[in-house]
Length: 119
Ligand code: HEC
Image 1 (cartoon, rainbow, N blue to C red):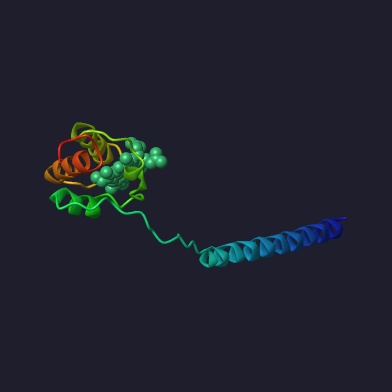
Image 2: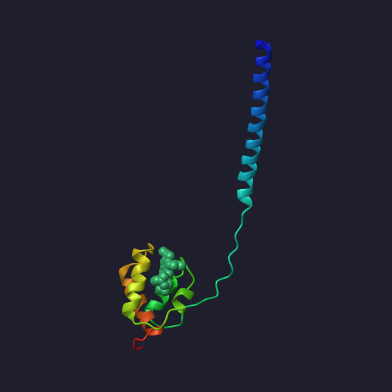
């Protein structure tokens, strides 16, 4: 009686180690396929409108970190006050590390070049 039970236990253990081996194999395969994942983004073609204002350079430096400048290009014509609020939102809500003096320059450039302000 005891011998039968022991052999059952042995069979159970053999089954378990087989399952464990399968699990380890799957995990190893999963880990190696993570290295194979490669994402290629298309070349960025959108550009900010040219200007001699200092804010143009500042916008080229700060406004391309997270998204395409198409986000700027597709806005309706708005004054600097709108752009100041917009750029401040990038800083406060989305964490853009843009210093306040640069925010002002960018708002002026966007208000004049994209917006309704006098050039
Ligand atoms: C830290 C990252 C970051 C930086 C830097 C950044 N943005 Fe954004 N911006 C975002 C995110 C996130 C959104 C929202 C995306 C969405 O809703 O799909 C956004 C959206 C926008 C939009 C669309 C309208 C809106 O309010 O959602 C405009 C316009 C815009 N950004 C302008 C700018 C300008 C101008 C600059 C440079 C001063 C800038 N962004 C820099 C993160 C950033």
